[in-house]
Image (cartoon, rainbow, N blue to C red; front, side):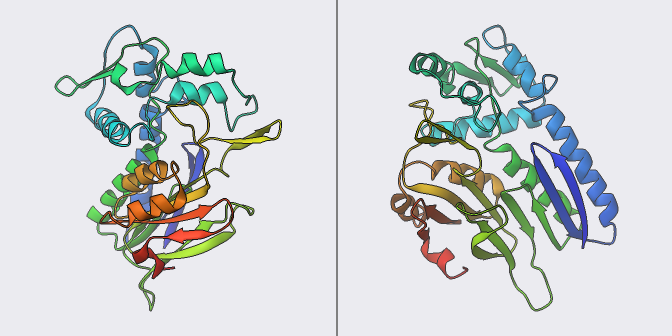
Length: 305
């Protein structure tokens, strides 16, 4: 197995594959990651995505087909999730600055103003011309909630098309497996981060084969103001971090982008309700760690822990 480590998209990416031409395939994968970051990043002023944001309230912007497709996917997920996932939440993220040195608790008036800039109905998509128009000044698209899952799925498809039978794509909290580890093992062992311990310490280990495991939790980025702990999972309806009994959510699915969507959705509401919901959905399994340390899993996934 040959491995490539890449610093991109705000994380450390690990690509490990077994193939006669592994070096060439990994070089191509690195090139694709760099290209995606250049075009899709909400943190680079020269990205194609930022050109849309810079023209908010002024005019529609024509973009390439792939970026339009991802924005369209994000829009559909935003509407179907009833704003639990919201690709227009960028202005609210930038207001709180959670995860950055200048983090602070915004005033209620600042939050109220920002909420007027994150309504997905104020974004107009033209699928014929591949144009995107943010109708209000100050609006911003942020694809962070789905982009890594999309990229991981695309890399998996590329590797499989090239004949890779075994491998792991790890985008940090977003793990996609190709095939099985081989030898006598039929499953990859994917550790689920313990939300209450140092990074790298697992609370459970899940067995997966040719599937994705995506995890999101309140432990990733947070800060304390007074006696209150605030985390980075923001509610697009209230403008404040979500409040419930959930510390982290992990989703096992065939596609990482589905995992991205469902981890976000299941960070809202309460743990037991979300597990009951996931038990009714084919092809989506989940593990939720509550704030009291209790681990809940869907019925089928329980057998693979």
